[in-house]
Image 1 (tube, rainbow, N blue to C red):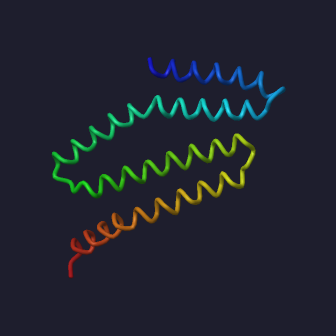
Image 2 (cartoon, rainbow, N blue to C red):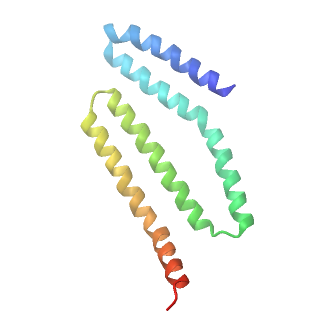
Image 3 (cartoon, rainbow, N blue to C red):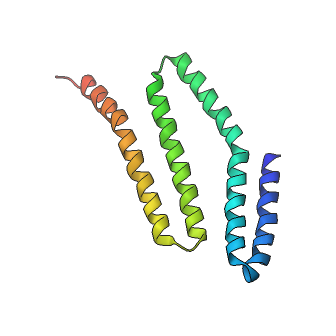
Length: 129
């Protein structure tokens, strides 16, 4: 039933934003941003539960935690970059939103280099000499 609460908050905020947009566009933007942050905070507990479960599975399988933590960082960067870009888009700044997305992609690529290196090394070991 959590989705009903999220949709309810979203619908209520949308109605208030539409009313405010005519008179006070800055307050409408602030309300939209606050709503996004509120929904994000609502979901943090759920995200923590999923991350904890994945961590336990990785530990029981003998996987090195450094790789899982890197994947978690990559996922976090993608969510935060998308969230930030959407807020900036709501303010009408498409070009800045694109730069935020580009920065997120570059940071993801930087974090992925060690994982890609391990994959290449593993493949090279499997190939006959």
